[in-house]
Image (cartoon, rainbow, N blue to C red; front, side, top):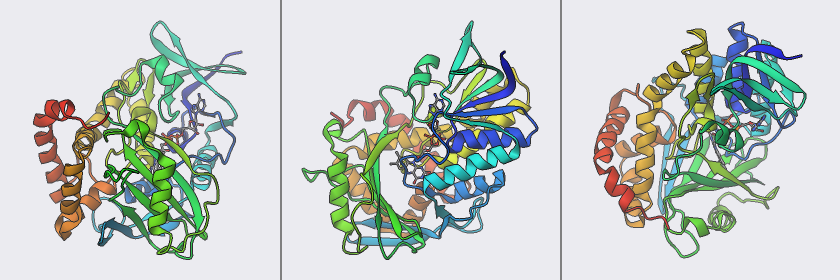
Length: 406
Ligand SMILES: Cc1cc2nc3c(=O)[nH]c(=O)nc-3n(C[C@H](O)[C@H](O)[C@H](O)COP(=O)(O)OP(=O)(O)OC[C@H]3O[C@@H](n4cnc5c(N)ncnc54)[C@H](O)[C@@H]3O)c2cc1C
């Protein structure tokens, strides 16, 4: 017998869980299908921006057990700046670090508690009938749905089925992380080192991070953008080891507690909606190209998909797309163009001097690094991004022609 729901969600990461919570809270019949088991890990830095904290609050999921973070320490060579998260704005004045095994379990448990039908160990695919997604297929049968929410993470097989893959010539990122013991695990600052170098000494557009977990360990990782020259041959394990050598003494760092693992950071998508479906979170390419963070966008887009559904089933995908586009597209587009720019080592070096050189510019960098900027951002951060959008738009053809990657 075919089951029937209002919304079927494929993927039970932060984005899918958020959609599940919001749909259940709205009184909808919603099923969330997750191919892994409860408590699965996700390769991640585990950092929750103040924006993510606000989204967790909207979803009603307490941050019990998360390690509270008050700001960001930016390190560029010998320059170090400690910047508290801004207060009095649209977002709380704190973030958190919450290892993904625990964060994702808390979110998916909240979805089940709100009334979503959460099923683990179920791999699902959209069912397409005459160009419209009409439900999902699972090994144990078909579930019809008025809307299918694709929350399956970085684009793969499902994205290929729906034409929702990464845009081939847009930047993307790769990042690797591990855990290690440190006596500084209880610090309340994220640390980001902006001056990474590859084996040949070339500056890498990306950063190394130390995100203290408050449980005796720190999440240590590095990420790099595809726009750098030599990206295809970049060895992330070596880059991580080089970064570890930099911080080993100051953090009294122990051995890696598990083998370092890497994953993709999708930063664009060909389409994020179609008849009967929407994509959210990483499946929609919603990752900030300037810091690789996407948990907050995943949570927000999950809620936005359900809001759109509540406004009318047939027009929901298009309205979802328009809302997400109005909020994030210009910022993310600017971020991707910026990624082309900093792919050039010289521009990267001088850009870094500016980024942390003065308090005022460092504050704007902080807003960008904290995912605090979008189309609604008031003040200097918003003005700078709008100006950058216009300026880099004019330079776009040149940026693509002169891209550093090879
Ligand atoms: C090394 C690294 C560090 C990062 N650090 C940070 C950070 O510190 N802060 C931050 O905000 N972001 C960070 N990110 C990005 C962040 O991890 C993602 O943006 C976030 O996980 C997106 O959530 P999601 O729910 O969209 O996707 P995911 O978390 O990837 O969840 C997708 C889920 O879908 C399931 N799934 C896939 N296919 C199917 C299927 N066919 N059927 C059923 N289930 C399926 C998967 O098992 C998975 O559980 C980092 C990424 C990397 C790679």
